[in-house]
Length: 276
Image (cartoon, rainbow, N blue to C red; front, top):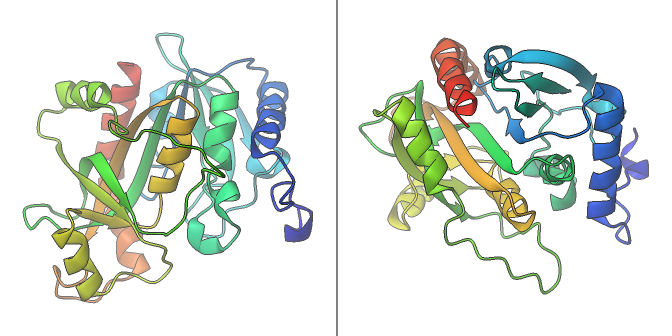
């Protein structure tokens, strides 16, 4: 699909109608009428899909209205329908559009709006991110308790006022901690990217209350709340943020930390979803 013909690039398009079309595509291509839970897999979380339950169908994301191929190597461009042992239907989104790709916020949150249109009432957002807390180690999963959106952007259009008081569900965080009591939590700070944050930007994030820095999730969470979903956020701390760690940051390091932690965090995530 060329950029020019993307259904969300037309300012007159209704993003919710495009999401409804995408949900209809997913129902047709997977044979599953409705999903209960949606899961977006970020860097390091990919193996969770194998452990959540039985894969009923896998669909290339490009066959679904409004989805594009991921820009980043290491990200999978597919949507999967999985049935858990309890019979819940999980839509696994392995095709995240990042804000830094420059396609606009509508496309960043299209996967979330599509998930809501498939009937999912729970949205699980995962990412790989930099950690600010000195006690954290690369390869450690942490829960997102709140976020700071530093993109200067929003998926909400016009006078759409949405309350974000309890955006990241305390109920779901407690559920996750009942499975792994050692889980810490922190405030996710979304920067625009794609450059990594400077040490000064990390100090700023810490000063204003952030403890995790990354380039995704916050805008998606806002759209999920607008759609009435309950949200659980997980960050894999892939590296310590600039100025906290002494060596230069690299994408390779992020991939490697994710690969090493993947079996552990994937099993954790699968257990949390299984308990929902």
